[in-house]
Every structure is written in structure tokens, then in C-alpha cells.
Image (cartoon, rainbow, N blue to C red; front, side, top):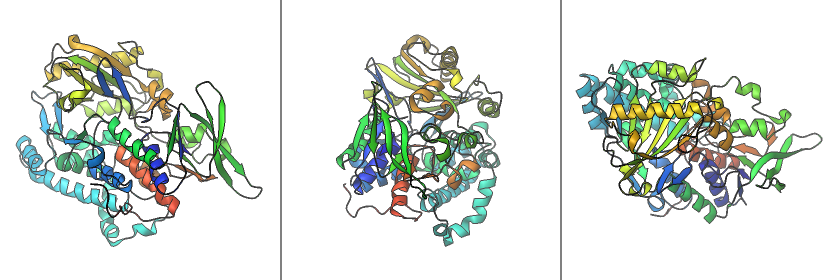
Length: 520
């Protein structure tokens, strides 16, 4: 029994079904996908969640485990530029391409001497990335013995430095230009954190966007969800939507530990149903699973544990349908305010507040995909990081969301217009829909209404993150962004693979072997 049909739940269902398990997935929503949602309105198709296709080899590896391939399942397009950076006090934007030599030349042009330093930085990022893939990402840490390889031992001094130093400090030692520092620090946002809070180990992520590739699946990210779901069903997994799991059923023998025996779920009419299972996998938010679906005495991570954890940020999402072309914006555009520390302090430090001005992310998928907007229009997805606080409220259509949500949206629309040189942007908006932290709490059971999950600070990374199995209930396992290895679509696919390895008793640290002749 798999709880939740986000990408982690679907991937787990597919891998387990292919491995011979009889699998049923229960999803409380009316559609699959979880955070990778879809909003369709007046001819516009908005991805409401993930929008960066990074680590393409992780997707391809998963599809090959399922007997297919990324080339067969998706139509991928490499983005050029990978993204565009607007700085608060800079007259011209900076286009970033996922090409090592271009990155070196660009950094050198902006800051003489930075070219050689960024080459060294990215060489370190690549080594660290490869070490992570081979030894740290695909393991449950059930045993540390497989980690004691020559490659890992040789890397221990460098790993120690990167674990104790911050991404902010490493970027500051590498470049002095504000925008270039922000380009190197921005991966912290993907990790639901801030550069000063994030271990410099995660500089490995710069290998992805500055030297590897940023791609886009034509049709949007729902095509990724659709492919994972299609393969899960093809291997026999059954998926039931509109099924809200309200309790994990357990039983305890007189002298033995508690054991998962199934779930109780509620349908749309409010009727409760019981389903038996030998194995229960929760791909739902870990906080919700532990504090709402289990009794207090069976919680591995009770509420007092969560009070000591750091949540990632919340978000205000703004989906805009805009009349006319917007060539000023790339497929991905980043808007960075000068005082980045103040921006992150507003989000993470008490008393929190909605940043004003804010550093924001804008996706314009219509730059690449003509099917996401009607002819003569553009599709914009705007993400405004805010405190993880459901009290900020929910969003809604056409300005009907909570006042704090709509006020943040209004300010950022004007900011984008001014910085990108689109003075009539507000007048050209024909569709507007917002999402706030309360939507994430209500619709996704997200801890504190956060948008991504627990922040990747040192004490919430690797084996210090939530485990993939309960310590109190045998037969209860976890996967998804709130468990190991962490946040993001690739990490969720890896999380599902870790689950499969754990059930097999496989303590190896690398990806599973792929079939001998996967589909072309």
C-alpha cells in the first residue's frame, strides 16, 4: 500500500510492482502528481510545481529500471540560455548557459580573474557531484560499511571542510561580483535553505546548471508525472484517487513490536474503508504521516522532534496569462535583490515577514512550448519565497486570495515589469491565479505550509534527514522529499529506488544495475 501519488509514490509503486509486489496507491486528491500539479484555464496550462529539469541521468536511469528510457517517454529540449539573471542595481541582465567554457569566459568578462576561479570551483563541483551519486545519494545508510571505500576515505578531508563551511562563504571566496555570488548561492533555494545555512558541500549543484544542462520536457512537467504513472500502471500498480488515508493500521503481538497491517481511508462521501497490506509505504509529507496517521506511542518523529527542525520556506505562486510577447524574459529568469541576506532573514529569522522587495523566480514556458498558452499570449509562473506560515493565507483566481498573498503578487508583478522593462505588464494580464502557504498545508498536508520540505541544513542532510523506515512500526517505510536523500524530482526518484534496495536488503551505495537491453 502506497500513500500518496506524487512522483515519489508513483515511482515507488512502479519499482515495487516491477519487482513482483502487488501494489495499490491511495491518493487523497482528484489527480496524481502531488506538488507537480497542473492548472488549466482559458487555454493556458500552468505547471504549479517543479519547473527545472536537472540531473537528466537520474530520470533516464529510473526509466531504464522500468524497461524504458527518457528518450522514449519524454521530448526533452535543452534550454539556451539556461536562465537569465536580473540584478537590482544592474542595467543589463546576465544570460547563463550550461557550458563550462562559456561560464568561464562570462565570469572572466564580469570580473577579471574570476574565470580561473570558477573553473576550479566547477571542477570541485563535478568531483563532489560524482562522489555523491556513487556513494551518498542512493543509500539508506542502513550500514556505513559500504561507504568506507578508497574514494570516500581519500575525500574525507575535503568533505569535512565542505560540511562545516557554508555555501555563502565558498561563493564569496570565489567571486566578488554580487550577481555572480548569487548565481553560485542560488542552489540553496532549490534545497529549501539559504546560502549562509547551507553546507558548501552543495556547491556540487552548480555542476548541473553551469556545466551540464538545463532541459525542459515538452508539454510541461505533467508529462514527467504521466510517464512515471503510465509505467507504474503498465507493471500492474493500481492507483485510486479521492482516497484520503486517515490512519495506518497496526497490530502488536504480545511480546513483539508493532507491525503495519494496512490503512483506513476515507472517500469523498466521508465513508471509511479498510485495506490490508503486508507493507505500507508513505510518500506523503513525513510530518503528516508521523503526527496524523500514527498514534503517539508509535511515532518515530513526534511533534517535539519537529519543533527542533528547520522548515524550508513557504511560497506565493502567481500564475499569469499575458497578452502579447515577452522576449525580455527567458524560459527561466531570476530576479535578485542586492541585499540578499535581508531577503533570507525575512523568511527564516523571527519575527518573519514577507520580503519586500523580494528575490523571485519567473518561468516563461511559452518561450519553449507553444502548447502552454493560446496563440499571441505568454504563460508566466512566478515563485515568491515567503515564510513557512499558513497564516499568510491561501490564493485564488483573479485577486480573490488572502490579502497578504495578493499584495505580494501585486508587488512582484510591478517589480518584474520595472526590472525587465515591460512597463505595461499589469495591463496585459488576462488570467491570474495565486497559491499561498495555506494551500500547501490544506491540499498537500505540507508541514507548516512549506513549498519544498525540510531545509537542507547540515543536521537535516544525508543520514541526519528523516529515515526511510519507521523505528517503531515494522513494515512501515517512507519515501519522498521529506526523507533521504532530499528535495526535488530527481531526489524523489532516488528515494523510491532506496526504498526498493532497502526491502531487498541491498546496502550498496550506488544506483541499481540497469536491465541489459533497455528500450531505445
